Image 1 (cartoon, rainbow, N blue to C red):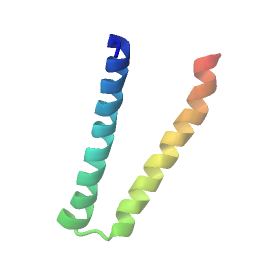
Image 2: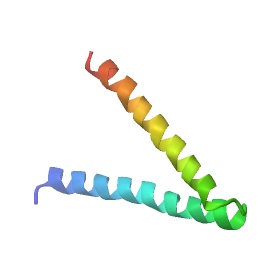
Image 3: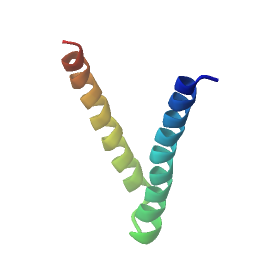
Image 4: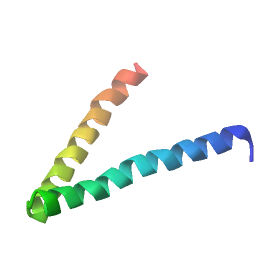
Length: 65
């Protein structure tokens, strides 16, 4: 394995951990600590995913051109 492959693998792993761990903890926070229904967490996740997609949609052409 080259140094570049190892670096990309490590970056991918850390990005996954940086996303998945807070997502799991946020579900527990919203439903357990705050007492909100699971649908509230689903709404938060849906809005987040929608905004991320919109950002990629708008930012893609800007990055190219």
